[in-house]
Amino acid sequence: MKIVGIAACTAGIAHTYIAKEKLSKAAEDRGHEIHIETQGLAGTQDALTQQDIDAADIVIIAADIKVNGRERFKDKKVVEVPTSLVVKSPTKLVEKIEQV
Image 1 (cartoon, rainbow, N blue to C red):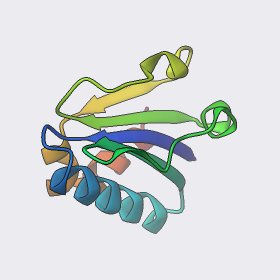
Image 2: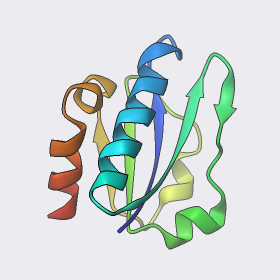
Image 3: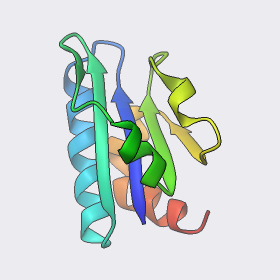
Image 4: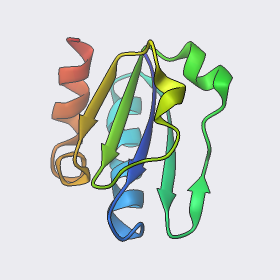
């Protein structure tokens, strides 16, 4: 499965990057391709391209704040979760997404 998404927490520092790292590792460990954009104090990093989005099977928004660019995901399956869930249970989240 090809997964894209956004990670963003209220401070835009720790949880944003921890969520990206844990989600990426859990998805890759289960054989999926994943690309996560971060939004925070440093602005947008690792921005998703339209090609990434078009090829994606599902979009994960792991955020505690409003994210920019949501309109890019119209017509895609979108799963929204708080960053804390990704940090605590990334593998369970990926397993649930596999069933969607």
